[in-house]
Every structure is written in C-alpha cells, then in structure tokens.
Image 1 (cartoon, rainbow, N blue to C red):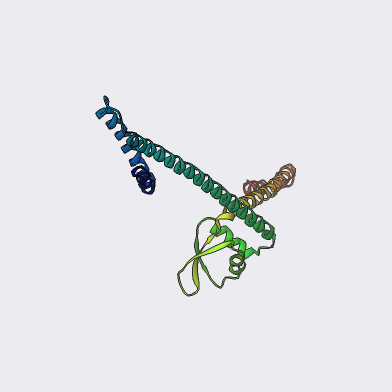
Image 2 (spheres, rainbow, N blue to C red):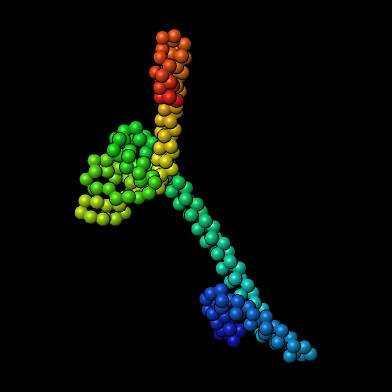
Length: 215
C-alpha cells in the first residue's frame, strides 16, 4: 500500500463528524497556503498536492452530505409535527362534537357543575350525583383529593369555551324573557293607571298609592 493511499484511508476514517470535517478543511486550506508560500519558486511534490486536494474535497463532500441529511431530518420532523398537530386538532374537534351531541341529555345537577367549573376549579364531593357521568365522558378532570369524600376538579379545556358560550347564551335568553315579561307588565300597569285616573269615583289618595307602586 502506497503512502498516498494510506494517507487517504486515514483521512476518510478521521471524518467522523462535522467538527472533524471543518478542522480538516481549515487545516487543508492552511497547508495549501503554506506549501505555496514555502515552494513558490520550487516545484511542488505531486503526492503532497494530491493529498491536500483530496482532503479539501473529502471535507467539502462530507459537509455537504451532512448538510443534506440535516435538511432532510428537519423536513421529516416538520412533517411529523404537522401530522401530530392535525391529529390532535381532529381529536379535539371529535371530542367537542361528542360533547355537543351529549349536551341535551346532561342533567341539571351536572349542568351546574359544568357552569361552576367554567369559572375556576373547585372542590366537589365525590359522591355527587352529577359527577359520575361527567367523569365517565371526560368532560371534567380530577386534580387532587382534599379529603375522604372531596376532591378538586377542573373543566376539560377542550369544552371550556363551549360551556362558557352556552352559559352566556342561557343568561341572555333569560334576560330577554324577563325584559319581555317586564315590558308587558309595564304596559298593563300603564293601562290600569290610565283607566284609574279617568275613573270619576276613584279616591285621589288610592290613585296616588297605586301610582307609586306601579312606578
């Protein structure tokens, strides 16, 4: 085996990482500059020149391959992360749809628990009648026990916004009903006030008291 071949094999076996390749490349560039400097007026030995050229080529090739693998690996990780994100979003969507399908069958006691937990986690007695179904469907999650029959629970984050939205809609509907009934009640009072005011036999003091009450 020639010295040149032996040197090449040693260079190839030395390329075990990016840092080694960079060191070899820098060293090769330095050798090129040094050889040309000391032999500027002399003929450069071919074996030395070939070894240096090969070292530069091998270093560059190794770095390019490592760079290629780096981008391939980054692209693979990006695709994997995107697939995981899409899978997680689908799971959340399916769970929310499951909650909306089950929502009409939730008993009043369980509804109260959901409303309270949409504000903040709080302790609930573990033998609460409305607790079992919520836990079974994973609508709420246990946090920690605070006694033999008491534990902190929190609302499943996936349905939190939906529960808050449902509660706000319920409050809004009840307010609209109240305003509608109150408006009708005021109309009736106004009609009665007008009729009583026009009545010639109505005592003025009684009318004044009725007017105060209706206002």
